[in-house]
Length: 207
Image 1 (spheres, one colour):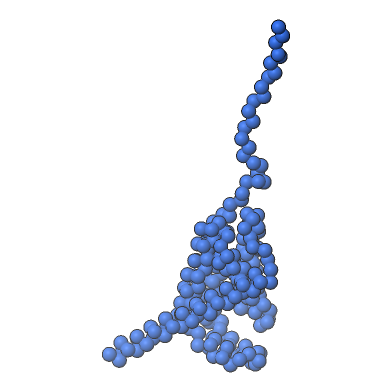
Image 2 (image 1 turned 90 degrees about the horizontal axis):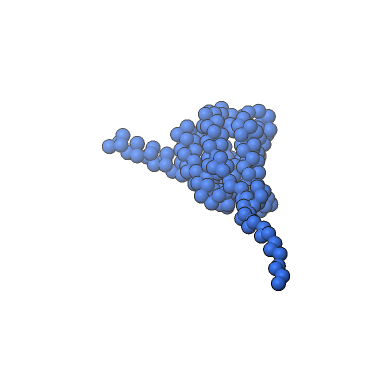
């Protein structure tokens, strides 16, 4: 009788957890909620210097750029501190909603990414404005050191996580549209709120 030689049984392989490169990269809150923080620091500059700069420079700018419609100068000339702060408050709600949307979706939210792109384009606009007037404009100080670096960093993190939408002309236009629409809405709401407050104040004085 012959006996089959018993071969050693190899140990069971441990379940693979995947390499470090295959583990999905989570988008940190510094990217999503950080958008609101970066925006708040940037807009603090605009709140501090915006209204006064506009009042002091509108006459000079009107002479330098006579090709612009008169409605632009009329709109800028009616700015006051209360309306500007109210507009910033409305914008805070919009940017805050975008940041929360990005946080809840892990950075995938189209609203968040469009707002992020719009924030970066907003910084470029500030630099273009400063170049056009050959000097300081409110927002141009924090744009190169905060707005643009944060936007590029955040987009890099989203790309690493595999959730960044491809950059395209359509995406850039969408980001600019979000930024422009948010600005228009914030100032329109602010003007309406301040106007109601003024009418109510006049009514109480008459009464």
